[in-house]
Image 1 (cartoon, rainbow, N blue to C red):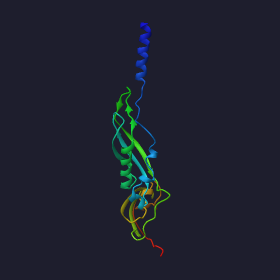
Image 2 (image 1 turned 45 degrees about the vertical axis):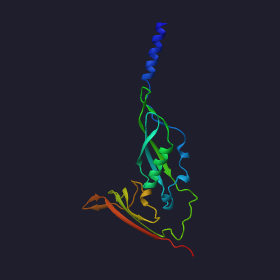
Image 3 (image 1 turned 45 degrees about the horizontal axis):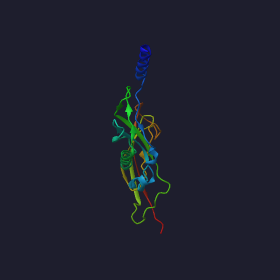
Image 4 (image 1 turned 180 degrees about the vertical axis):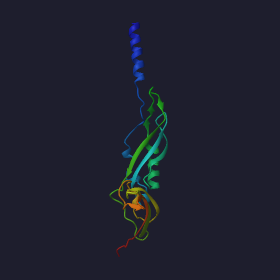
Length: 197
C-alpha cells in the first residue's frame, strides 16, 4: 500500500509539473454586446467605421479592471465605445500559471465597427453640406505607402487614412543624384452636397 501511495503522489506531482500557463477565457459572446444600438452617434453621422483592438486588464477573480486601446480605429468615439462596452459586459475565467493558480493578465479583444445598413437620414436644414479632408501620406523610395496622417477634416468627408494599408503603392518612386529617395505628399479634397428642392 505504501508503494501505491507513493505512485499516486508521484503521478500527481508529474501532472502538476506538466501544466501549462492558461490565458484568460472570456465568458459569453462579445458579438452580442456590439450592435447597431451601441454605435456612437457622432461616428454614425460622420460615416466612420474601423477596427479596434482593446487591451482589457483581468484580475485574479476574472473581473475586467481596465481597458486601453492597443489598435485604434482612427475614430475616438469608436475606440471609447469599445472600452466602455467591454468593461460593462466582460467577465472571464482568469488566467492561470503553471501551478494552476489565478494570475492577472491582459486580454486582447478585436472589434470591427461596420456601419449598419439602415443609417438614419440627416436633416437637410442642419446637416453639413460641405466637407474637406487633408491628409499626409509618406512613401518609401519605391513609392509604397509607409504611413497616413489626417491633418484636418470637416463635415462628413470619408477619411482616407482609415483604409490606408502600408506596403501598397501610393505613387511613383523618386531618384535624386542616382539615389532612390522617399517622398511625402499632402492631399486635399473637398466636396459639396446639393439638396434637391
